[in-house]
Amino acid sequence: MVKAAYSLGTPIYGVAQGNAVTIVDETVDLKNVANKIIRSKTFDFEISYSTENACVVQEGIYDEFVKAMEAEGGYLVKPEEKEKLQNAIWHEIIAQTPEVIAKEAKIELPEGKTFFMVEETGIGEDYPFSGEKPSVITTLFKYGEFKEAIDKVNAITVYHGSIHSCGIHTNDEERVLQLALNIKTSCLMVRQPQCLGNS
Image (cartoon, rainbow, N blue to C red):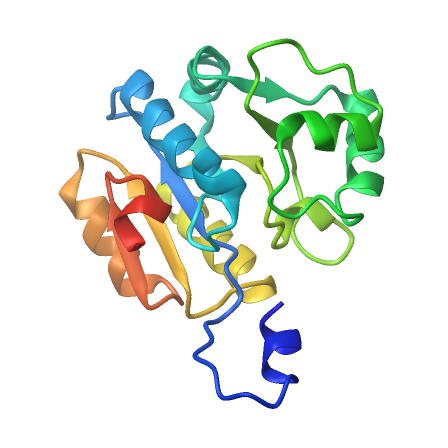
């Protein structure tokens, strides 16, 4: 979209690609974090590039985090639905309602669900969900040690969105410092809904 806007011949202000990522660790209240993420993820049907395109979650709390997200309106895409969603998301679904996306993907979306969650293990061209996707879809990754979380944030943002932003939900200030000193983005949001905080 930024490239298209630049090609119009009219001076504009543009930003970098927005593949913002947030880390969630085991020190936080997951209900509170899930509420922040959904408020950010569903704001304006995710037209903001600052929102949580991916969540990198500590493996010990991963299942509990998914349940907290589901309680806030998240729909965890089933393995057999993942390819259908992947085939659909690049066709007219930017900033669309979850119902429009579900219809395009031929997914039966339960009532009350306001965004999609897709589990992923890899990063890069072979894993399209690790890239930028301005829609109400967030990709979930697991991590073990905190250094692995930092490495995943950097790999995701280098693939699609360096110099934009990332976030972290932790009550361990040493981890905030470690992330701040090692990320490849220009902005770090701490314990905030990313799109709303960046805005």
